[in-house]
Image (cartoon, rainbow, N blue to C red; front, side):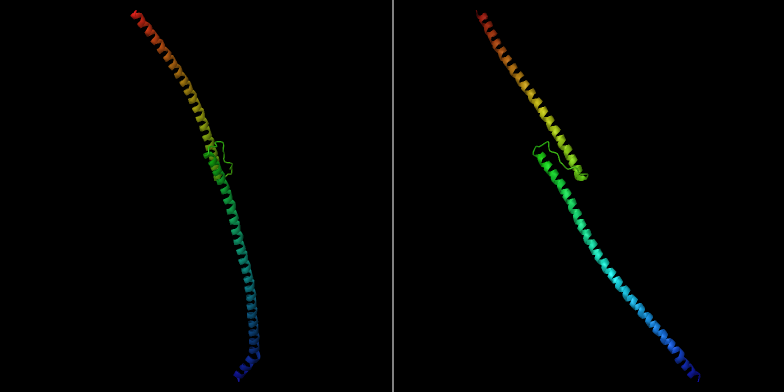
Length: 173
């Protein structure tokens, strides 16, 4: 009889409570699964957005790097072309040429040194021209003096010959 009372109590009180608790647990699980699905979809969308933003950032960075590379390459090539032009003109004898590149980088430093070198070359060549002109003038003066000495020597030789002839005539008479 106690078993039948316990069985009745279980059927009347525990089974409905168990059913209610089981239903509540199932509802809680279903709520958690639904929230997990929603969170998963939200994170999935966020991941796609981050992936797209990352790809866009990488592409923008690459474009920026290429543009900066082009600007740097253009800057360097313009400086090198200017130095090449000036060096070619200097090599062809134009001592007045100067490199017109005045940037504040290494090529600007090379340009300033090139201009100083060209100026020194010009000064040295000018000094050489002046020295060669002085040597030429001195050589002309020396040649003129040598010619005068030669004329005087010739004249003295003739006068000595005349004197010798006169002495011989005096001695023979």
